[in-house]
Image 1: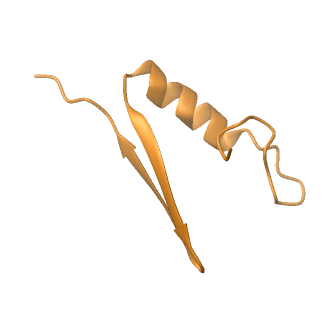
Image 2: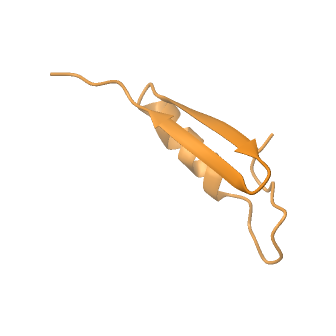
Length: 51
């Protein structure tokens, strides 16, 4: 998936960005979603809110 380490389609890319993001979000009990269609990709990050 996109969130596996070392997954990239960019020349010179490390493929670590989304993997690191998902790890940090998971550590805060949140989640990340990805929607993609031709010419557009959207990531939504959800984190719990506490008072």
